[in-house]
Image 1 (cartoon, rainbow, N blue to C red):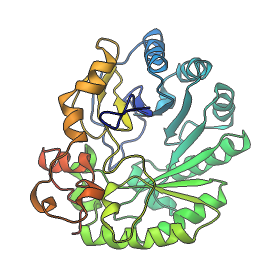
Image 2 (cartoon, rainbow, N blue to C red; image 1 turned 180 degrees about the horizontal axis):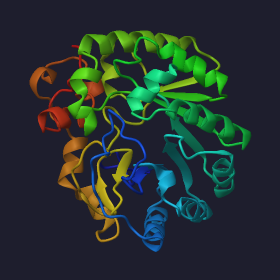
Image 3 (cartoon, one colour; image 1 turned 60 degrees about the vertical axis):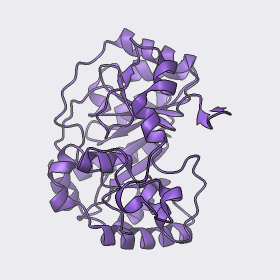
Length: 334
């Protein structure tokens, strides 16, 4: 999968695909809730699947917006599965009852992630700005497990839950969830507007990761996953990641509802359109993608001994707060 001259993958492993920015929630941290974008027809979505198959991209993860608001979701997933793609989805769980779980199973989803940000129902509902959302989310986990669909739980770490993340792990055990993603706070969209209230300071992030990594090492019955490259600056941290630094633009790309490609959902820089432009030209020659793959140390990253491991931390967070892809991650505690 890699180009031996550049050690660059010949295509991303995953496309994170927003079929729509429409959502039945208005979450405090959402990157896309205030985005507006045209949506493609079902035949056009299938054309995109054909492009992904042609370029041997193995994984699609549907996000959004809320994927279940697209009535053609199951038809599109069935089509993609027939072409050999592996399909997953993230949902808030509100529309996911037993009937939907059976359709998800029949369509062939590889896994479905449900977003739950606190084991305290009132805190979760307040964060998601939707009364009753916690009960809907845990019910979604139940009906998916009953339908034989592998589940994951996605939790955005913020000021409401970073001291109680153990409770989220216990909640996952209760609802038969084998894997929990403890996502870092991205500072994009509504998350940027609410970051002073919700985001942790750098020292708090360090303390959280030191504790969470210890829990991960000691936990045998549950897989705990992170997606934050700034962790690599911790002394003794070892991971078998395929790339160093942010994976966006290297292992994954993002698809907007109109077919526009961005490096990730949290970096609103369009590098091309998957239906109009040559994909290989975008992948190999996009100035934005190549800048992300060859970041230069700036500010406090210059001369830092951890830079070769973390490569400045989260590129999306740096861009959201400074407008520069190469600036240091504002979460960095060094």
